[in-house]
Image (tube, rainbow, N blue to C red; front, top):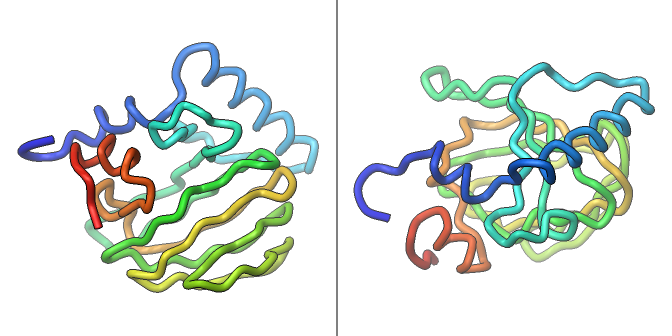
Length: 168
């Protein structure tokens, strides 16, 4: 990809669409409602990261606020049991993950551990991480702004979808 990144176009390439999108969102909302919770009324991003295997490699992001000007982001990440957010790092973004519901296997900086409801962990910039839902799970992420060009993935197919080239 040359020139300025078009975030909307990139999201089209890495998100579910059509009927598959609607079915995943309906299922997600049903599970969250069964927990007695409600997700924010914002446009969700059901990500398959360009690999088109959503129920294995994917998540649904609900951005509460992604305020680049003021330097913060808050979002919910919903994951169906068995979904993985693939190994990646951020050049600038500092994140805190809080498990609202469920259980997650977190791989962070070479360590692997289980996170359960009420647990939190901090992810510093340049720290490689990935996480897998061991059951349907809801994560609250509080972080620096979420910028489309700040996530570098180990799987170069994802980087090609986002950047148009391999990244390291």
